[in-house]
Amino acid sequence: MTSQAEINKLAERYPFVDEELEQLIRCHSALCDIKNTDSFLTKIALSSPYSYFFLPGNEMRRRIEIVEGRILPEGFGSCLRAAMSVDLFVDCANEGQDLSLERFLEGVADCGQRGHKEALRVIWDCCSYLAGFADALKPSLIVDLCYRLAFAADVTISPEADAKSIIEKLESERDGACLSLEKSLAQFGKTDLIDKQNFMTWAELMVPQLSSTLSTFVHNLLFHTKWTRHHLNFVPFEYPKLDHMSSIFVGRHCSNLFALALTSPLMGGKWHNLYSFEYHGNSMNRLQYSILGFSGPSVMVIETEQGHILGAFLNTTWKKSKEFYGDSNAFIFQLHPTLAVFNPTGNETNFVHLLDGLGFGGTKDMPRLYIPASMEACNAGVMDKTFREGDLLPGDALEKFDIKSLEVWAVGGDDVIRNGLKARGDWRALTDSTIYQARVIKDKSSLVKDINLLDTSLYKHLSEARGRAEFRVDEKHGGYVLDRSQ
Image (cartoon, rainbow, N blue to C red; front, side, top):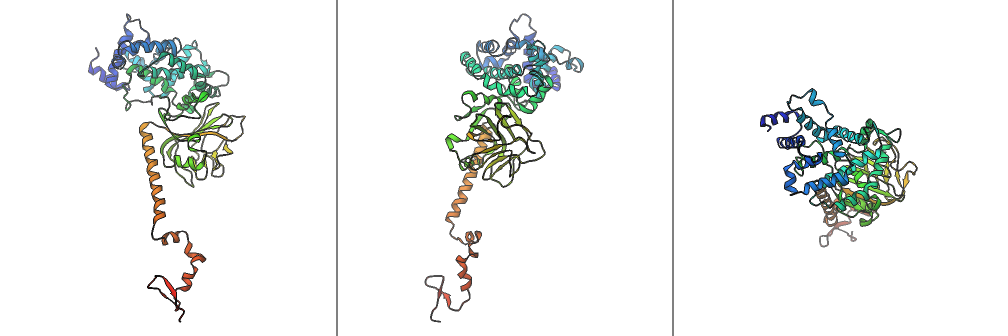
């Protein structure tokens, strides 16, 4: 039995709170029980009291059987255990007497709490072990594992888990979800194989949420729904949940949501539709009305007539402006047929420009990505000074394209979306009030002055008549009258 003093000492060295350490110590004891013949993943899951509270009886055991037998690659549990044990830091630096326990704590921390680089290292090692300790791996192996981890993470905590429907969804969407990612990763290698350094570079540039597929899975196994979000050093992976039917993410493109969710921690969870061609109309005015005033993260997704998908992500307030605006959270991307994310270079800050048309990057005269007021003959360039160089459309496609469908979605979670919609409502109310006041104002002279009508020939007689003797005040009717008797 570990004392509170020992727990306090462990808490000084490992990124866990006391409650988490108590659970991890129980888990380690289960792993050390040689009489317990359960698998590595089953021991981890069943050692948590939360699993019995949220999933009574043998439900958690059944879930892990689905995860190990139907979702994750065969032998993944053993590979994960080995990957978590390779860090020799505890042997060299730590002062604990139970090196086995501390090595386990270090391994769990490497799966997420030590940061995404360590978690990516664990993902790579797992794939390497699955491939027979290979030094270079096929992109499909890495992408497929992360895709399956995202599914497995959800299965371990979902209120209901029907094995048949889960497997059908997994297999039906697997190719669409993984192909654009596999093509993207393959471009970072010199052959059809990828090495560890190229994998790490690709994940940093293109899919910063990739490591969270592993982190979320391990955390769900250990702590179930007991999230200490204030203490997490990673953003849990969540599959996007659209609140409105999409005309882009359907059929073969439905699974592209997985790839897009990996590009930013704000892409997971609820998506609220702000605008779509099909429901709001193919018009720049309708597009602007739908998005202006919304404050918060949003993603614009475009499907071209050729079937390519591209778009842009912003975390700012939509407004009409003669100048560029936005911040360094913005990026533009190609989603299909290959995922490519173009983050800011830091050289320019021309993130977004919305006036008659909508542009991203580049200059006012030539934006990198541009949708004109007509919403026809749009442009997707290869380079500019604001965003990293690369193809927004496939290399064999022209830079000009026509829109088949365009959608704008609010993202970032329920609270963020709610606040953004309130900001849009306030902006609309202010705009409507301003227009109404301009219509009903009684003293029009200020408006007339504003539009310089007093300087036109229409009111020229006022200055010419003022001071002439034959003009006098008409007290009965108001104004002036010409006294013809003089």
